[in-house]
Image 1 (cartoon, rainbow, N blue to C red):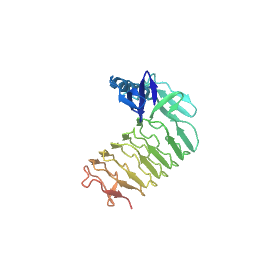
Image 2 (cartoon, one colour):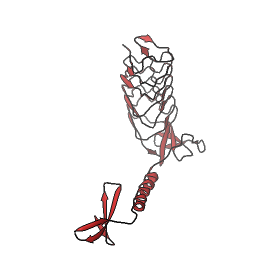
Image 3 (spheres, helix red, strand yellow):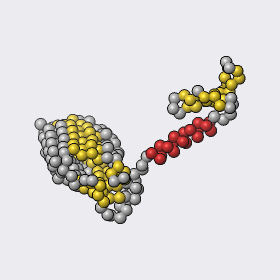
Image 4 (cartoon, rainbow, N blue to C red):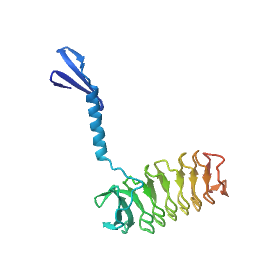
Length: 251
């Protein structure tokens, strides 16, 4: 509580501010002046601070000059929205952090094949809220054990995790709408994938060769590609799923 110019300023929680006039030491009445302006100014200030602290990535942004730059074990390309795409990982560590900023720029994209054939990697920690992960980004990462797909991703591209034979866990935090062809093909250690009801498409061979897998399909799915999964131990080559929410399991 703060008294200033004979007014009591009382802040309630984070967003609500009340002003009172002093009539006596034992009596307060609500300030008759327009407090809406004060509250609006407070909210505008919060919005401004939030905007200044957030980086907006544009899905239609384009490369600035097509040049490849290097920071540590990463090669990257600059984009017109001020962010970068990781083009290639060149290290040999078993554990890799993908920070929210690399080379002083925010990371918005992981390019096609960026980690392809990086067989030494067992763990990848993705701290950046990337808006896209390119095709075959982690293909043949044969020792990768788990991966978190952030809520900012809506499409799992073709062959993203193909031949990641030791991949046991995939955490999908957002509403993925499409799973591309061969996205998890031959991930023989993968045990469970929960697919959002927002997902409408599972591409051809998406989970082919996933011999340990149980897939829970959401209610929104409308198309499953050839050999994408095994339904009741029979290869599935359907275009519309008749029983949404059904557990599909290889045995």
